[in-house]
Image (cartoon, rainbow, N blue to C red; front, side, top):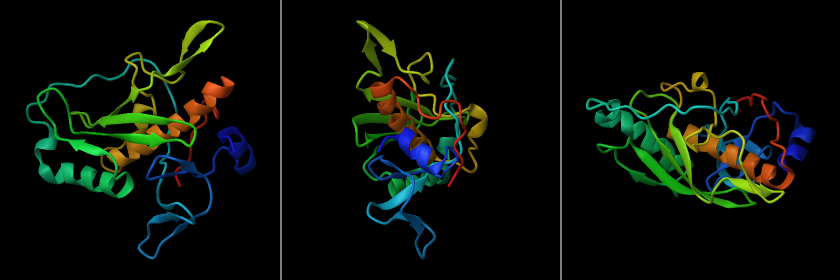
Length: 203
C-alpha cells in the first residue's frame, strides 16, 4: 500500500515507525515489557519523531577543534541508539574534516538507498546524504531533482528548530531519513510528495 493510501486510511497525523532495515510502518506496533516499540511481524521499530520536510540552504559543517564529540560519553549515546535502531549502519569516528557519521542501507520496500548521517559540531540538525542513487527523475525528457533537498543535495528531513540535541540522536535523524526516502519513492512514481508540508506527529 502506498504512503498516500496509508495516510488516507490512518490520517496524516498518525504515528509512524521505522524498522531496522528502513521500512515505514503505521500499525501493528506494541510496547514490549522493556518499554521499546516492537512490530508484530517485523520486530523492533523506532518511532519517527515530529518533523516536517523543507528545503533551501543547508547549514555547513563548522571547524571545531574542541567539538562536543571529544567527550566520548556524548558520542556513545549516539552510538548506542544507532546500534539499537539501525545495527546495519557502519560507524566512522570524527576526524579533521567530518563529524561522527554512520553509513548504511535503507530499504523502503520500493528501493534501496545508501544513506549517510553526519553529526554537526554545533549539535544542530545532522546532515543526511544519499550516496546513491541520484535523487530525481526524468520527466518529458529532462531531469527533475527531487523536492525537499537542500541546495547541497542533502536531504531536508526537518526544520532546524525541530532538532533538539538533548532529546534527539543519530537514530532520530536516520528515522527521518527513512521517512523521507519512503516519501521520495512515492514521488518517483506519482510526482506527488505525500503529505507535503504536513507535520508528522511523534509516536
